Length: 378
Image (cartoon, rainbow, N blue to C red; front, top):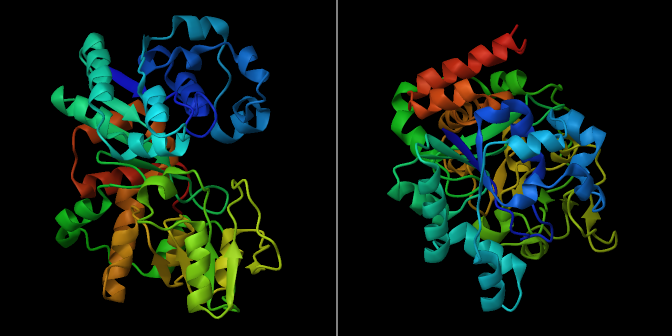
């Protein structure tokens, strides 16, 4: 049995934070998947309407490929209720700070939460794998005791319409603590791809490389302030620290790009605020990109623009390469082996394929077959 787990804790102010993924999996799999989560996810769609949830918008459904479930589907789905006092305890311990509660969830093994996971999974019985969308050491520990693998999933760094849509599937972690570097190290000798940067960008990008005007010494990429990337995997950096770093090192000759999902906007008189239509246009205006761990860093690598990344990320091992040829090989491995075609992370056959622990060449072959079948290879 394949089990999908979603946290319901309102770390960022909203309950059921993975509602669209829940709807996506329910649309895709129906009763072929067992859900482990809070009853909140099973609330009737009309209840969510009063909160004006974006997941209910027609555009959201079309863009992510799901539909809203009926009351009957919600009532009959394969489901185990998951209950834990973790969030309440963390708020009590940290003066009501939800971000600190999120940090603890992402980075620490909580004995009580681990026990809650262990008891819930044991009650389900015969679990093949747990599909998970957010790092949680307590879940990992419970699954390890029960000898159940955890597949960590997330939207990938390259997305339509500028790129082929990708996803993450990682047995170690997502955003931070990933297996990307270790997988490459184990397979490097057997996975020499012999491709150029132009080959890689030409394959994954849907747009031609723009003229690199390099008007600014650096491009500073800001991120969503309460995203797990900054909360748990930033190595002490945040958006303000990044701006201070830029002021110290680039004499005001830098361009700052805000994240569209941020609740804050920069004042025009504080710095050069980027107004480019796309991240690609932004990168083209900069000699280098400076980020904590934004996926814009990966886009810059594809464009041949140097990158400084201060935080933990799945692509950081690419930046650590000392030679250009090695860096391109690492990038190729990352794109073809580590990243997964987006549609496949919602494919049961592919999930079971990855559970069989195939070698890297088989994974690359599977991914190329998908891209070819989707008309991406000509």
